[in-house]
Length: 302
Image (cartoon, rainbow, N blue to C red):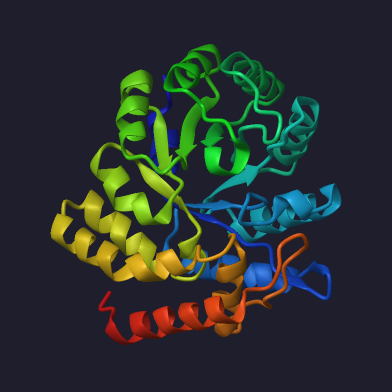
């Protein structure tokens, strides 16, 4: 049984934070300013050191510094759910334990990448992590990045076996997955959209919120969409979805977070700096992104 208050805290818009860099190092002042903007916009949660945060190329020390900065900047005003995944179970356990010690509210644990474990392997992996910590865990199924998907039945087994496994971020790109997950997991389990462009369709069939890339750039707008849906203002929610649609598409014109960092740099919030093996945005992609953002700025009425 998931605590009602916890479920409420984990619903809504969670921002999958970028990790700003400058001259090869984490740009802590820029990260703090970004978090301040998110809090002012009313996001429900912050997700440091996830895919969008380039966790795969952060050192352990850098990742812990980013988490520490996020916890301190949030000051309890948002649910901090740190990424702590790895393709090695023991490494993931270590990350989870350290993140818990740094004061996060919960953990986002991605499916192991490259290994392509079976469903039995996924169950054992997530079980070991859940047993090592006490704080809430949100599973993260993103087959396009990891090559493996969490079956609804596996998620249900995990939720039954571990009371701290309370949610799933679904980024498989299929609306029907939300119905399958909801049937397997019941109404109390928290389900997030992991695809900005599918947030509204996912909400319509039973999701509770979104772990958003776009909210780094447009937090007020993404929050407005979710609030409109929750308030029963479905026409407004659809208009907001349609207004955001092209911008969201352009934020994924190349691998995340390369376009997002370019868009944020345009506002002066951060530099465009990313870490290899990611490469800077191609000129033609940048021009297309710029055009989309300018159109949105001149036509959106949010």
